[in-house]
Length: 468
Image (cartoon, rainbow, N blue to C red; front, side):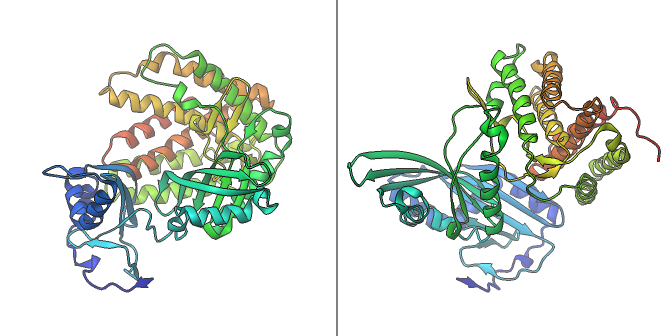
């Protein structure tokens, strides 16, 4: 049920936008306000779980994620005690209708709601109901359609939540075979999307990738898409074994981990195999359009940090000057992952698995290689900042790791000689993308400026752009 709420109005607040965001990003300040707003619900949850609050501030507040586009919107995911709370601002639109479960902090103009009451993910509440999920599974999985088994129990546990976008969860299902009475335990992973068409597209894409030639030949493995549950906008997949590659790479150590190096080389070969699938799926991803979008987002950042904004726009312009050169370096178009980084690879003794195809599209394969390189460089920058400017301990071996990854990819893919320049150019693009996302997560952090500086260093290694 949706109702028009006119009091208290989010327009009543007189706090400037930058102060609203600054307060919202201070857990010690915003925590008590959220606690006051949701106290009754929080106390009810405590009573149901048998927990008891301590004297003083009862619920610890932490920020799990944030996205801020100045003058547009800000969404922050909080952990408040054992609960998840989402706080949102929208400055470029009318109030419109506010969902019934949404509350307002009038002094800040912040709308807030508790997980799982996300108005943009209407199926999320249903997907956390074991009975609802069991019924959907019974209608979708072959075991139940053939009446060979029935569900005894289904437990649903959220793993990762992105407000207004998606939620990943683990499903533990206990089945009983009707003929033998044997009970089996099956684990599935489900992802709920904000858009039903997007969910169906991802499901079909996963089916195509899993049946591609590289997958059949064993060069790279992918999680199997088990089922699509349209009533929940959920894609189900089977678990896949392996250790996340990012857990084997640490910039806080001076000695490189042999498993991390070997895994990185294996990931390069697996990525090359994925790019050779021959599939044409997803929308074309124009790099010139993305650079133009970077400039718009950079201009918005000028409302908060003019100096950073100017550097981002200048960097986007510099990157654009190479656009006519990319073809001379061998740029092509294939199916790309779109969010390629160490965390997307699972490493085991036999094979490398590639995960998460939400961002797949048609683009230059160098975008994936460059994004991977940018992620490694970002690891070093973050560790240096944690060390308060003292060089990260990975400084001695990270360049070699990046070089070996790029060489391994080129060897496995048979890329032209100009691919090295393409990959480095896309690394600079990836660093700018991460700088913008870093600002959106933490607008007062020095990280975005540091990433922009790293991108400039990468561009200095490239030949000058061709003159048109």
